[in-house]
Image 1: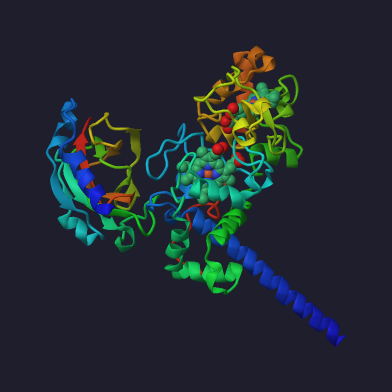
Image 2: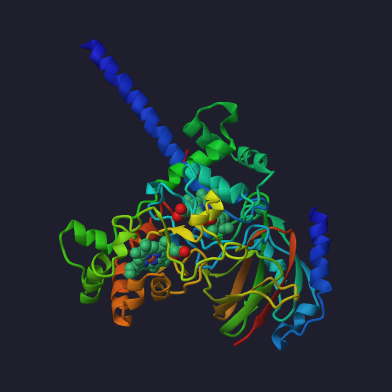
Length: 317
Length: 159
């Protein structure tokens, strides 16, 4: 009897401890996501390009880097990003959110946060901050070197995995077995999952199949150097030229402009821009209905939840 | 590195290539020097006048106590600061800035809404132009997340 009790206490302590460290990782990642010290001149945090109010995009065609270098691709939203296997617009080799975080921090194509060659600087800056000293210790243990870039990216991963968007009007209606409120949205839903076949690639519930497709209006020439080659840039396979990962349409009404290059200003333009016969045959009215449906995928709690917003200055630990 | 930037900016600001600037931007060509304030008291002596371009010295971010926490605050190695500007007439005002700092205008704890953004004319030394709808009263202009320890600044009324 006594032994069982002790086992339970041990499990309790271990479990409690584990909970603490994963919560600490999330809180740490949250702070880091909003910390401009992750950029070379302290001018840019992840949230500079990924703004909560726009479902973690920024409203620009492309966002210049901390040192003014031109951006290459449109900033994607981060709704449910922890559920994606393929990360970024066109790369099957990014192993996860931790590895992805290194791309803006120290990537050079394009230069975003500008830390290439200065990676050690990040830990140096963070070590000055008492709150980080406490949070890193809670999240990764007391060892002296626990404030390091690897743990920074692990914490960013933990935070980004909490970016769940599943409380849109569409989700609420599905849960309660109710139809969407307007006739237009209902008809749009029917088209989306039926005749217009959007669901083939923008597959519910993520509204992305997490796979790569060629939907560009024109085929890129073999010797193309000026335009974005998409998946080819990662794989080097000629057949991958012009392929991009299907973007999620959750909160898409908040993430304009659209397309990997930000070339579509509106949802209607984005729909027309697919090189798909079905999309081109849709009438203006039908497209408007589909847009009305896409608007029901807006999740207000996702873009206002303080757990995802700018963290307070106070260190709660 | 920083000195070079400083000198570079000064050159951009003072010796910008002769370009045709519209009437409301013409004051850009005659800068005066001002140091930013690090707290609300300091703004009393960091006053910007309309239609007068200033070359402004900024302060290391951790030393600043902003009147209102900026949306984009910057990190420990960035720069920023505050100024006071008196608006006598309600209208649309234009802030032209030599670098890409984050700009916020605050009155009574509330942020003024920005009406439009654009880049400055080519070779003018103006990096960023933001228009704000302002009421009459005293505003605090906050610059944050600046990569440089100095930049140039001009406020004009456009409507």
